[in-house]
Amino acid sequence: MSNNHILIIEDDSKIINFVSLALKAKGYRLSTATTGQDGILLFCTENPDIIMLDLGLPDMDGVTVIEEIRKVSRIPILVVSAREQEEDKISALDMGANDYVTKPFNMGELLARVRVMERFIVHENATEPVDIYRFDDLTIDLQRHRVFLGDDEVHLTPLEYKLLTFLAVNYGKVITHHQITKEVWGYSETGDTKSIRVCMTSLRRKIEADTSHPKFIFTEIGIGYRFTDSRIT
Image 1: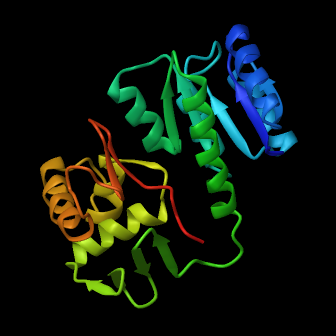
Image 2: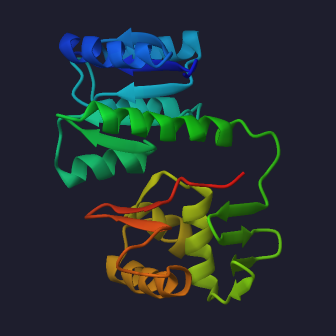
């Protein structure tokens, strides 16, 4: 059971009721808003742990809500929206959403995504920087710039290392091609995704036992990548 506080910003009362029943049954505390303005106000006054956000709000686009909140906070934001176009997902993720669930959704999947958001709460509230990340048999030592699979060191190019560490530090979060281009390649505009795919293919060959069934880096088709959230602490 969880005691975390979730703010739901959604204008469909049926969805609010449906989701609220499931979340309350798992112990979550809830606040709800039916407009973007009210959602931003509740975010400022009630200090929630997670935001669950619809994009199609009556007074403003949900992406604008993300933009406003990201000016002051890195609170985990889970978008739950009927918009299925990749550009809508990419826009929300680029603006700072942590994950995206498309309506209609399975409640089991939604609860699983919420549990991933809870891991971001711990990560965001950490008081000291993390130097070592462990995922199954993969160890990334940021201080020494070294990567290991079990006891064997993995030799990466500088670009492969930068890509791996960017994904790993944001473990569990969907990272778009644009974000990778900006943070890893250093370009402000969206670059050639072919370069990302080539680097990713090489990186996967070095850290994945079976590249056709990866356990560390998962492809979000048309959007980007997600690093496993199964971090060992």
